[in-house]
Image (cartoon, rainbow, N blue to C red; front, side, top):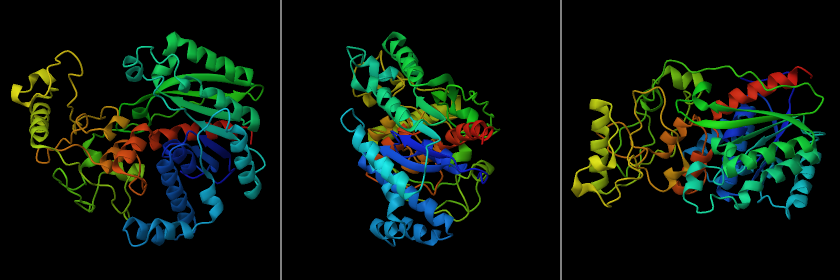
Length: 419
């Protein structure tokens, strides 16, 4: 969807690989700046900016040359105005760095002749709010400084006074520190002049074939009469196989960047995840030791034959490597191809793939970067920069673009009511 009526501007804070931005870009919002601390994620954002610029001028041939390895990143970037690349700000947000950050954003706005910011989006790193993170810390992460990054978000709100903002995070945000963090956060937003409302939304309801629940808190300036948007559910009658079915059959350790077949599912075409001229990238399977591959086969067989998730204590004794039979019993888990949604894709993929095993028993491997990106609804033309570990982290931490698009449509409807 492309909006041609009014071009609203936005800033993306804690931008990561740009999943949330992708949704707003897809409906016509104009990016002012993306702020991200991770240098590899910033390169991903810059490469995506190149894609949008070259597409606008019908010059994707250069982008495709880059994906095929025919030109390097420096050459790709040389075809795009420097101001587009400079809109990606590689900076850690802290109390000490905010003045410097504001100066950079102000410079961008002046160069691009942007007079005001309509929207701010983003969500701070979620480790301090996640149930998993809190479970492994003796202090329940109450003193983790990431609990208070929302205060920096509020400083950006105070500086640029956008009409609305979108704050995204994990459901654990609501209960962190016995709920005190969330209560204080909403008070802070109100103190800076914003009414807020939140819901816990599932990415599946936005067409993502994944169960992924997130807190979506939306704020609007007092007196503007905006409201929390009504989001349109767009899940259909698809299964996970519709995401993976056209990709090549591969063994652990192999790379295959050629589609298995030219035709692909209606799900992929309707969502734009795959298009006719796409070039497959990042489709490399991790190497696995033989013991893990044998476990994978057992886990896949258990699901495909009996729809049963194999627990760790169900494994033959010779395949077990530790004696803990009371915790993390589902550490080996298949991405079931016959279900309408996979389990939540997480950044833990960067450490190992045991929790994300490909459903095809012939392959006996964990999913590739591209397969993980598809489960997150990233289009195949979305290229990720960095090492495999870094890219898995970028994907696992991202807001699924299809979910972001649905949110962006709702925000657009609200803003256009007054435009």
